[in-house]
Length: 141
Ligand code: HEM
Image (cartoon, rainbow, N blue to C red):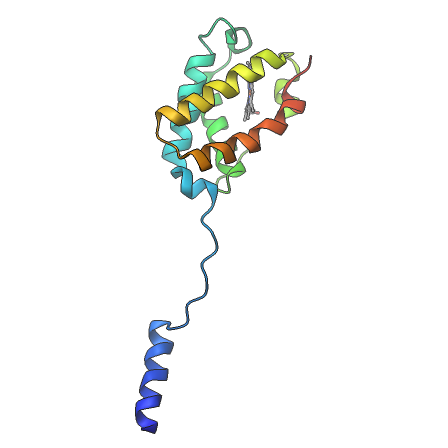
């Protein structure tokens, strides 16, 4: 009997009978990681840089670099293991004097891109809740 109990205890230790509750997956993981974030960033920037409502700020901006920077930024903000080496939101947008209307248009495009690419409602709203307070740093009007 004692041997039997010892066997069970040993097997449990090896197999992990008492599992610790796993910490919830990060938004980064749930949203689809870097492939999804880069898709959202790239598509959003392709649209807003051509849309007459928002394009003016992007004139002369290196879009490939900006796409990479926005992707890394979103990665960090959603809990991914990336390094964002860009400026603060305040500093990087100060010169462009971005309006509330432009900000709202860009966030709308991001929302639409998340829908189109199949991001879940919960994850979409979580990301939008992260972005919304940035308005005070991005917008100047
Ligand atoms: C929540 C909304 C926004 C986020 C999260 C965001 C994020 C970023 C990031 C991460 C960068 C790169 C900074 C760097 O690499 O140093 C950037 C730059 C830039 N953003 Fe935004 N942005 C937002 C809204 C907007 C809006 C509404 C516009 C214009 C309609 C805009 C126009 C630009 C431009 C033109 C740059 C490039 C600045 C430069 O290189 O001189 N952004 N943004």
